[in-house]
Length: 380
Image 1 (tube, rainbow, N blue to C red):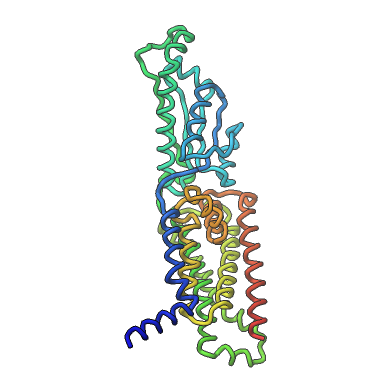
Image 2 (cartoon, rainbow, N blue to C red; image 1 turned 135 degrees about the vertical axis):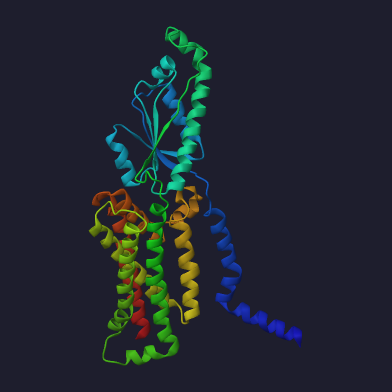
């Protein structure tokens, strides 16, 4: 009898595709995400170099930085005005600036100037890769000096004491967050997480609750069209999301000390667009599930976990494997967080957030059209 009950339970589990998904597939997904996405290591950080000297010493340092696992040479700058533009476009996280006549200064005076400028919107990451860059630069200096010390001393006319070592202490500059406040990092991520939870999770659960309890059919027999019923269901969450957005911004500025450096109107417009994406996601979930438990499961596991791990709010996307970097373009939170950082902390012009607006606008349009269409067909 016991064996019969065990077989029955096995049959029941194997026939339920969602149970199989949870038991067998979800652990694989979780171990991959947590194993590769959760990392404090700095890898493949995009950097730029401004090198007016262009001599053997600066080339060797640049090559050593680019050859390391920590950095990727994204571009070479040709004038100082390009430095901040590169940060604002999101092309780089670090810029190495060499002084003019770098090699000559190094072998005549024993010292040469180099500046390491880091994007400190994430202070922990900025401190880490700035230190990595400084260590690589210092090590390369010593190797270069040991190879060329005698040669350049003769060329320099023995103007420098051979016993005095070549020395360099890179100047580190933290851009956008010189106080290294942690709030600059987590406020944009929290904004995205709160808004997507309110919009997507609560909207999907609310609509599915009506279906599960059988009250949705009662609403549909009323003279009001189904589209207006759906809009009536999601409007309160849209209003609550606006209130949450206002609260977060006020707390960020007046309690956490994170200023809104950029255009407040653009920041609010980007947030409203992201709220629309979240509401569309909630409608999508409500179309594919029939119970509140399933809606919560999809929202918490399928949406919330990738949002936290792959959006860049907790761990740098550049340090993840390529496959996860490609997947990370799917969660809308990634583009919202990047847009908030640019507008709120970096204070960029509108032209530097066109990409974020375009991607979120495309997501909102596609999700909203597909969700409403499928919902209408299903109701009919």
